[in-house]
Image (cartoon, rainbow, N blue to C red; front, side, top):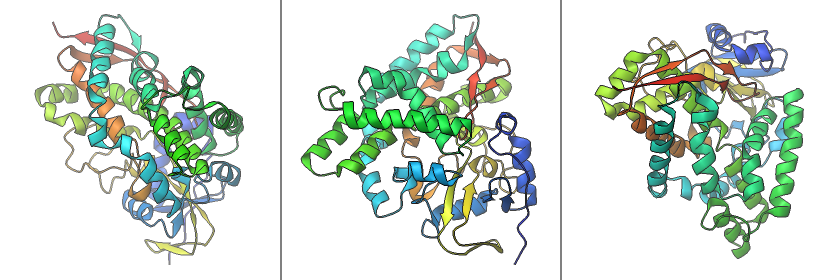
Length: 392
């Protein structure tokens, strides 16, 4: 058996969050399994080890929480990403239908219309913010309607979404603030949401009707409502911001896409791979496990560092390069296995719709360097000065 190497870092510090990629490279160089002393957690850093671990939900449990410390784990326990079968299967079955590709086809005309509108508005601007003006637009205009919250909920969705991902880190200042904001969300769901104030035929409307009919337990239903609210914004906003940034810094890839629009989905996925909006979730080892001849002890917390695995030199040629026709297209940006992201198809639809709206109008994308948003779990931008050069 091999000794597990240690890597001394402050994974949730501002400095790490602002410049994580050199750390990830050092982690990978130590091996597929490392130990982070400050957190007292083990971590998986390489693609193959992480992908296999994500499939082994019986040995590496999500059911005791997926945060990087015990307080966060207990607070989010029971959400769909923090549950194991059979409860996870019940929740996913209830949650998934409106997010399946066939069902999402009904929303595509509205998404395309909104995409065309925002791109036509932005192309005439001297400069705009690629985050607040562009990346926010579809999630806040379309997705909030699909979710179906009344006005108070809509206004707070972005705050609650960010808070939920702060809680999934540790109880630093961001994590503690996140707990208070999620308590506010829970009170709102249990006390103010009803069929009279949610949008008819929305995702939440559907869940409330299942609760009333008795086909879904109320506790599980309220958790699913939180799961519709929490992850539906920040991850996609981050992915769209990364998409714009990487296309601006790789104009040849934008030209390649203009010449071959069949690469639209590849382009979206490459931005998700390289940007990796979700840095890390954790699991608990329910028994002693062996990963590539490293022994992880029973009860250990194991961090799944998606953002590191998605740049693994062993599986990606030139892993730090943005390449939309990359031969190896697999990535872990949406997770893998039974806990893979339920909203991945919607995120791809949003990204592809924006690209389709841009292709006939935008000659070139220009951006200045972004400001990094400080969140414990989401790697994204708070600002991205952007300019579209129109096709003449």
